[in-house]
Image 1: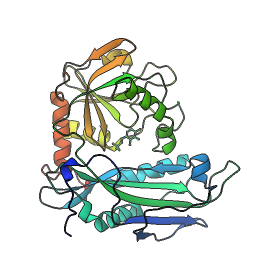
Image 2: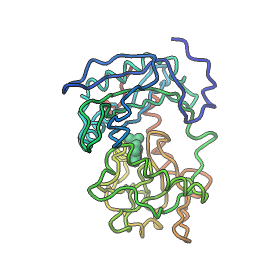
Image 3: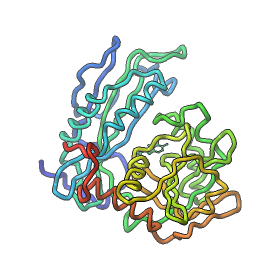
Length: 340
Ligand SMILES: *Cc1c(COP(=O)(O)O)cnc(C)c1O
């Protein structure tokens, strides 16, 4: 399929309507087969469960063009599983893994003209999501749901190299112990908006959230997990029941251990020890790793030795190895790359 005439290297991270999207409905206890449609609008009851009580969950993954011209997606089985975990927590029906992967395949295939070419740095972002559609006024789960998958091309996250960012320790909490921080649900984002708008107004790029119970341990940012590098080259990542299990972070840990021979510790990370780390990065599908140069904490600054000009050396190796795996220039572990 001929590619769209788009200036791939200069598009941002925004919504662009593409050709087709996948839609499947759940009614009377079962999912229908689903269809591809050109209709990019959703028509639901004014009293739909999603509109009244925020019963909605989502996922995010990307399709890439590899160095040898194949269209691939990265570990979609993990997105399927995580969506199921999110659905169970919000009393929503699960969407089966095989049907999920099939839906991803169909949508990417149908929009192959929007998959950015290799070397542009751009990718096709894929957004699967589910929401309650029937009227719900007494507080209870909906009985009917819609599962949709749309795609939108997104530009290179870092134009002209990954500059380290500055983040602040937030005075707001993201997730309660035993709450919903571990699922990918819109509700976690709705309540983070005030915190991120506030942080941006103060001149910071992101928020570092601490654990809500004690405010002594590092959790994550609004949409990415932390990875730290110790001065002796160990990879450290926070372990907590209230952070979202990032697929990028889990993949980077595997890369650290099995490709780079680094020692990895997944454990509680106290904020007090952050000043002793050599490098810090945020990991998620959007950027793979965003380097953090500085953390602002109520008048005190933690400046990582890696500085404000470029990624730290180990962070960079991790970044280059994982993006090489995704782009097909480094051999991937079994099952990580699904060809469309
Ligand atoms: C999606 C998300 C991440 C990153 O997860 P990936 O699977 O790596 O994209 C991290 N934290 C939060 C809160 C998220 O919603």
